[in-house]
Image 1 (tube, rainbow, N blue to C red):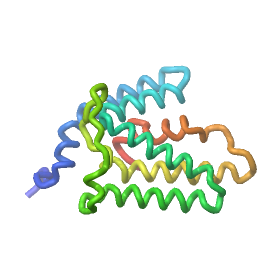
Image 2: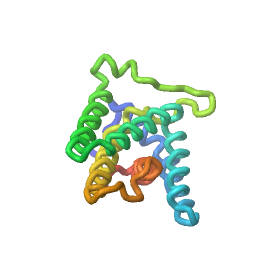
Image 3: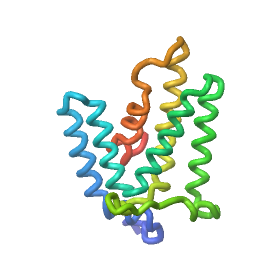
Image 4: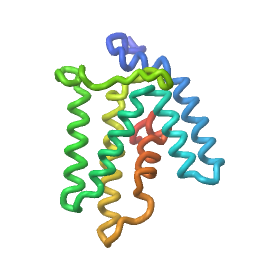
Length: 171
């Protein structure tokens, strides 16, 4: 029997139900960022708006996770990449619903942002892959000395929150 097998997976069912809206938003943001002169700033702004719509107040937590990984990229070269992977493992463990502290993860419901359509911890698996990549790239880029341009927090956020990648993952 072929068909949709998501009757027991509420997370996938909710995501699939809102996929049309999310894909339309991602397409609109891609078009906007390609037509604006300041691509980096436009991509960051669109990514922040997209994540705010998707996760509501939980977007603040997503930005916080990005900031933690970005901070790890400033560690000495021998520690930065292992620290990135330790942070990734901690994020993945935090997502596990069987663990008692999972219920205590904040789910902000701020009047301006609301609750969003998708719980922010559920976005962590693919997000941490992009963030570990940022830590590794930033660490390798500064092997020759000073940290080169393109690895600021703004760049980290723009890369991690880019709407099409945020939806599709590392395809």
